[in-house]
Image (cartoon, rainbow over all chains, first blue to last red; front, side, top):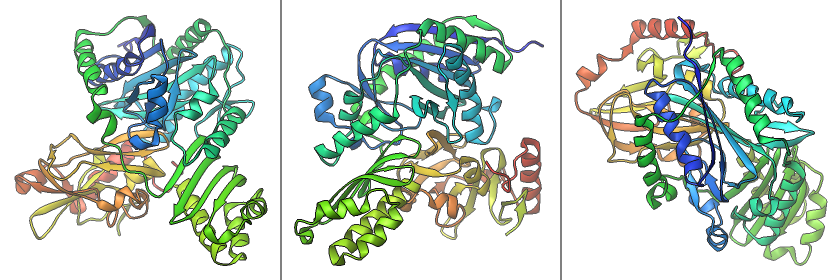
Length: 338
Length: 148
């Protein structure tokens, strides 16, 4: 018996809300026996999306409100992200029984055709071992994944234009300096790839049909999915959904810009540390402790270029405040390794 | 602890192999539920866990909460019907405990079951349970000694 076709739905430009709820409705449909589906869409306006487990307070709601950005919680993983019409979203949704049990293998397998689609439109993309899609060492595609009911969905985006300032500004940081450093890291490690969206879509269809050994069938939502969409529209705009069921952030704060590139901060009483860590080494640091007595800049300089462990040892030689800061660096290291 | 395809599978627990879930009846009549060594191996580095809160219903085959690893969010499936009476408070601050100790400190929720005698009949345990789990792992080609 021939395999079911790969359903392809290109929704075009849709509202920010629908750019989330449409593919969740597809997951519901695939879970109920519908065919594997490749979907694409472009949000017509900017907004912020947060991963299912992300604490609500990780978003700077004041800035979002000032900029008129709605915040929606998705049902797959990853952190808070700024999204706008410079990004074309794609989602591949398949029945859970059709994916490898090993989650990393499932995600890699479902992202691989997208990587080939990037390459087909002239972007020298590669899928790194840890799951990021990069070109020239810079991340060019955000992604998230998860099991929604009985379906597995992997989402990603073609970024034709990226607003680094907006992307950094919507993330709540301990202070303004940290926000500036976050934007600097984003500019260095996240890149847009101005490929033709239609060519990318066509290439994605070719690559996913080939990978899944199916024939493409351009289609639309079923009546059941449309019913689910109505419910999802309501749920995703409900404060109880957006603000809960987030876990609470501990005393350590972190943001992953790309694999190996982190912003992190920790505090205990009046002792505070904020850091950027790239490939295991501190690039930027800001320390505060009442007993540093104006030596903070020198202490920060002594840690730059070192691993967190090395910096901790250096700090321990600086007496009580240094030992307190070393403790915070230990907290940051544990958080980053998690 | 017995090993099945290099995965730790204690013989005294009850399992739903396809969902990689274990259940353990307690003296007070409640059931402690968690994910197996196989599940934590497949998930790899668990960065977040969100069990349902106490008071929420547990329905066999439905989600008891979710865990996240490597941008993947997946459900933890309930093996029984009943009511969640406690979520593991450690998971909020240390979700990695599921990787380190899935049958101990990494338990997920405690459930008050409606009818354990009937519920347990749907699960496998003892030597028969190990054999059933091994058959499933064989069929899926899963081995905890291999890099996930």
